[in-house]
Length: 558
Image (cartoon, rainbow, N blue to C red; front, side, top):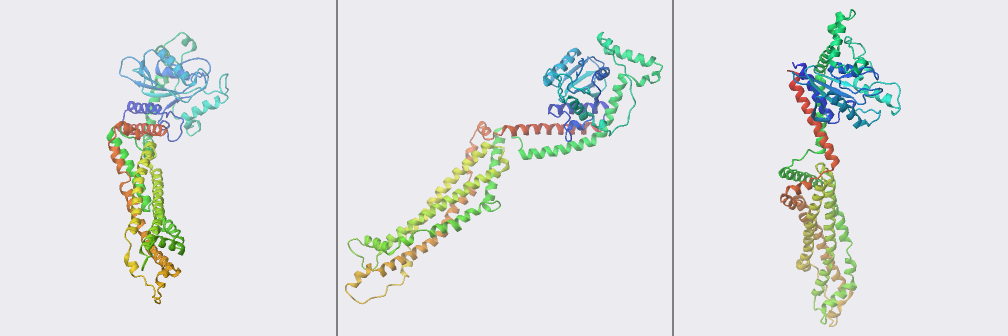
């Protein structure tokens, strides 16, 4: 089993580490400090608490005065040494040793004023003092402000309740009656009188006088071996060791639960990033891959938004094609105008081929508008999906600069894909105009022959029925082309924009990032300072709890 010294020393170390991280008791459930047993000194103001502590330590080191002197909890950790000189250390001044205990008293007063000011106010932030001496036992004691019934000048009206609340946070098992029976015997001690204090009677002399008193007293002589400050210190140390041992299972359970909670919070916030360029580059690429996964899920239907692309093809494009002004363009009046202009000074003999071609070319040019509009509509959908994907990528939320860089790179790629898509759909329209489907016209029914009137063949070429048939033939051809483009424009857009976005959205960005120096990579991974501060605090707490668990495991069952 672990020795008393190792268990109490372990608790001392954990308590000091807790205080460094701001956990100094009074925090309620979930506080590691609260889970660790301590011995608190409680009493009214000027009731002799400080004298008892000094008797246990064997040194005169606590501030004295009238009224409220102890205004912050003093966590006094005693460490028994094998020999050598006595000295003291404060947690707030870790590299400074005090061998003059008058200087310890002044440091306590100065450190109290540092938090509370030179007032009579109190603070629950403790002062940690460790004393190393061959004349003490391993023990942790907490000196608390004395209880009072009235506030004095310079104190807030709430001081009475404030002090009681502070005391309750340390000894609530006792004050609320959960342990109301006296479980250990009374221990009598003899404090120095005010006259002894005024005469600077040292604590060793006071201990000798105390021992002589109990040994020579007819009332207490038979109990002399169980009386005095030295016996009280040993009794408290033994009791504290027993309480620590009994609480070890619950302390470990509490530590394990807290570690799991901190780990979960760190997973949500994101783990710290290594300082070398390789680790930073890996993190950036990992963030990019996470974004890319979310973006593809939007496109493929795992997340909403990709269906809007199909909406462009199934609704917007057909509606735009339907609104094209072919009725006006192929009206009899315009057909007559185009054909007559195409004939020039010499009318066509049989079929107005040049007129046909001009009507078809000018009609096909109308398809360019809906084709380009479809490209732009899909481009806007893809840009919106990039924005949504960045917002939905939890890993990216901690890196605002990287979010902007990825968005800029993705949108730059989408612009290239849009330009490629625009060129491709326009090329589709131009291809239809470059080479007409001759078979379509060969299959058209011929006009019925008329009587051989020498004036009929020329004059009929500009008659309404003839022009109406030309307009109808061109309209049928345009409708055939329209149906073709309605199918091929979506194919071209998907090939040039959607598929490319899925395959190569960040390819150039990857190459660009790979060429950056460490300083540039660090700039891309800048985080919200508040988030960094929160994560750093969690990491320190996690280290504390893991260290505490390891130390308890290594000590408790020896």
